[in-house]
Image 1 (cartoon, rainbow, N blue to C red):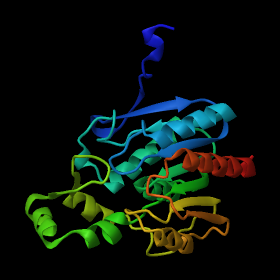
Image 2: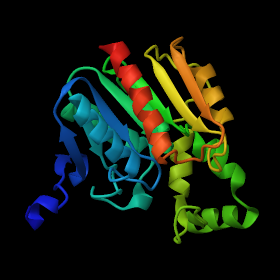
Image 3: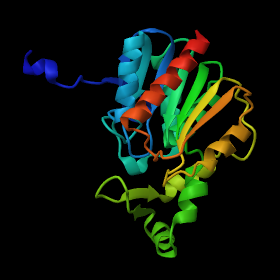
Image 4: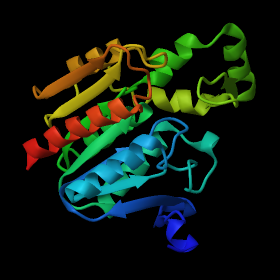
Length: 258
């Protein structure tokens, strides 16, 4: 085996309006396809995205992972990204890179993007799988948790940097992200989504409280909704036993759609 075979695959590129380039990896396979939507400040090289890719390859299922604008290997600056722009990226991926019905998997913020994409393209979405989904987090979680000093910095500078549990660098949140988030809130009214929905949520999640998933269930029109709460589960749900659960849940959803 030579060194070239060990090198990571070079992503393909989807050109977007304004010269932006969305990086993606696509695996051919049977329908319905699976699309992975990453969380805030995450990208398509995360452990869950790669696990689902391998899982879909083993099943012979079509799969696609991609980086939003300003994330990972896509062009742009992260702090120029907003919920609306990232949702537009997800819809563009559905429109231009996939065919037929798709199952969307959304992790954390990706759960919000998943819902927005499904609302925009309900005829293309066969099922949804949320992992600690965080719809409306900018309004319901972030704004509520900022201190008075952080809110003042946000108004003064247009960005605030908040301590992160997941790395040494603080996480940037922009005023534009919060303002745009208000225009894309989904938990204020019933969502006309009728496809099957599966949700996994850790009850020890320090970032997105598990009652958020109960609120989401109430706002979905679909009657085919199942939630699995993991009592000792954290936000990422990326331990081996968590990934096994994710694989089993995806298998059952895909099998029900076959």
